[in-house]
Length: 202
Image (cartoon, rainbow, N blue to C red; front, side, top):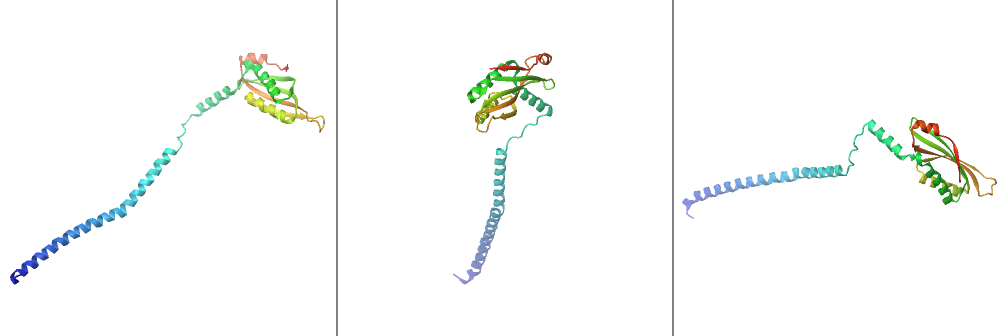
């Protein structure tokens, strides 16, 4: 290299270094900005996505809101359900048949059925109070009561009274009182006039 060319070479080298330094600075700045975005923004964005995913899953698994029902509609529905659960007063012979069948299946002695009808004018339903004098051991009597309540679901067991002649006697004499609730089969006035107590022998 000739001595006169040395200043030109130094000048070219200085310019090249300056150009390369500027490019490196720009590239470094971009790389630093990308790193800041990666480490600062990405975790927050990821946590937000996870939270939103959980909220969506929770909303999907949550029970559907119960529709709002007015008090009058609810009362009417309950009244309709009540009358639908009652027995039919026009078929009381079926109740008597079921009582005798339940006694036979349970193995107890049922000779007669005493009943007393009544009318609830305000509630617009009829009821029959049925008294059953029965004999049998305690497990059979309990089985009989269960069968009656299953086969006559509109009946209620109101009272049970037991009597045993001696401590060694396994046979128990009991008086069971049921009440059955029925839909009127005839107009209320006629039903009230015709209601009367009675007895059904076996």
